[in-house]
Amino acid sequence: MTNQNPFDAPSQAPYARHIFICIGQYCDPEQKAAKLYQSLAYKLGELGRYDNPIRVKRGLTPCLGVCYNGPLLVVYPDGIWYHHVDDALLDRIITEHLISGRPVEEYIFHRLTDNPALAASCTADAWEKE
Image (cartoon, rainbow, N blue to C red; front, side):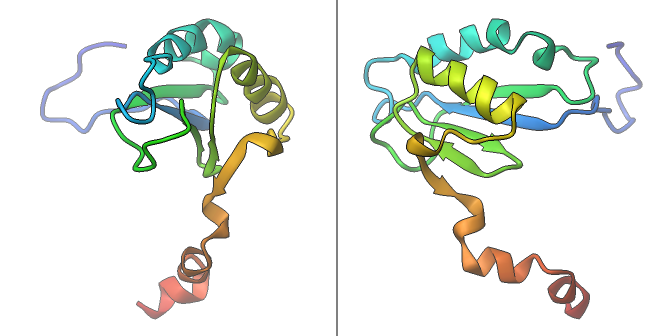
């Protein structure tokens, strides 16, 4: 990555998903999330490579607005939220969800697609009417 003209819009290499891990003090009182985040770079392997067009980006967030039963992890654009994430579950999320396309059902507590208001507002007809 090179330093471009400071007046140009930035560029972004292609990627497929973005994982956010909550490091909030109530969600993660034992401060395990930061360690999960650090290990995620290694665990993603090829999926984490910057030049991989299906790479998985990772990020930390100070709050996901849930504040208990963490560490919490969310996968976008899938909109799938996981609770009580530890090293073993992180491995499963990578192999089952990210690689094989099968979310780890028993640890999902929220899906963005479960919001009927969002589903109705995201149809092509709804956008055309605005």
